[in-house]
Length: 113
Image (cartoon, rainbow, N blue to C red; front, side):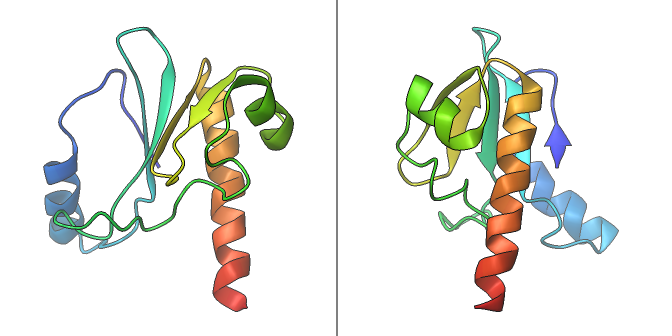
């Protein structure tokens, strides 16, 4: 996971850093605050040219907003998760990290099936 203090054009840099560090595919999510101070979770795509996520946000959260998202994710300050699972937001970084952890756990289960 990578946490940025604010949004920045990070996508192109991640793939370069991973190549240089010989850590290709390690980062799954990036977190940052938007201009409203909402914490955001964004999935990292498999490559710079791709729209396929390495790991998408948990399928049970996708397309949910506010109270429905909070109930599903076990958080109190969720705002939304995009229906495709590539981006979402909550008012604390802790909630975004919790959603990422659940997403990674789901991904591991699905890989075994």
